[in-house]
Length: 422
Ligand code: PLP
Image 1 (cartoon, rainbow, N blue to C red):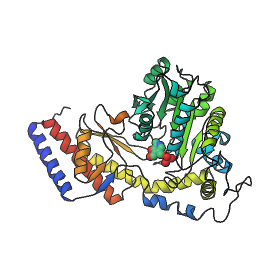
Image 2 (image 1 turned 45 degrees about the vertical axis):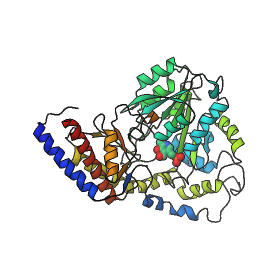
Image 3 (image 1 turned 135 degrees about the vertical axis):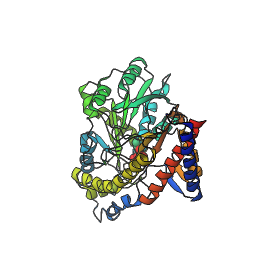
Image 4 (image 1 turned 90 degrees about the horizontal axis):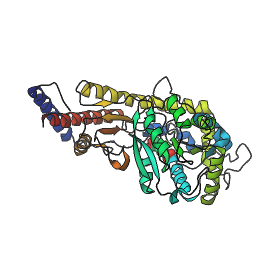
């Protein structure tokens, strides 16, 4: 890191940062910017869910939702989310309360029962690796660690993972069985994949015949502006490119209705859907169809989802504006940081000078502002540049958030100027 400032000017800035930090610490705040959880007011938007289905127990096809069965989930709910997740309703599964659980299960099933197109169980492979675009979602990385899947980081660009790197790696290495993707309003950068990226993912040649794209479209409907981002249809593109079984699409209503009490979805080729259903039939006699019916009655249709997400946006957008305003006013022009300006999703990524992220997070924690551990955005918790910090602004109230971001910026200035003067 270099600067054009004179040592005296830097010393003055460091002095100011020290005073701001001391003032922050003296306030004994307890502020939390760690997890991307919906705020209570967001959850209140779905309060009516709790009184549904309101004495009605019958699905459109006459199924009594109080009873066992219906492993693929209610068709009327799948029809609503077919559009949102870009998967034909017949190829969509409405499952339990968590998409992460579905990703976990897909990995376990792939390890223990041959996925369509595979020559053997993944667990019998000599080498099992996944590409991990970075920065990425820590829970994807935890799943890989849990199952001993090697993680290979791939840099993100403004259009998604660096496809030159992805294409080269998957073409030469049959041990690479998959890639994690959060294609829209990515966690944590907010980046959305370009049409070109989607097309290249669909058509690239892979050495592994059973290569899978884990397409975690967790933020498919979670816009923060008047111009919703649309991404290309991966499932359709894969089918067209002759790789029909390549895409596993995931999504859920965790950040639409109730986090951890919504409905999760899996979409894929008919062969993959049958594969998952066959495997799931051993672990469950059917999903919670009462919750599914509740969601149908509450959301009604894809327009209903959009209208609901507008109400979510009204609560979230001001929080993202606070983050941008304070980052700009406190760090703009300092040369100490850059950050993303997401058009949707739940996160902002802050890049600080190399070697500073851990220290910033530690100082912030000591002063009462808890941040996601530095490194969590990278496989094995190892951000080789130690530069990336994930900001999750959804949960705190507006005043609290303002304090937290001001506190964070004081820490960035403190650590950044200390380093420049070292
Ligand atoms: N995928 C991504 C990218 C997320 O950010 C999250 C939650 O933060 C999840 C999945 C979890 O989804 P679910 O609640 O459906 O398990």
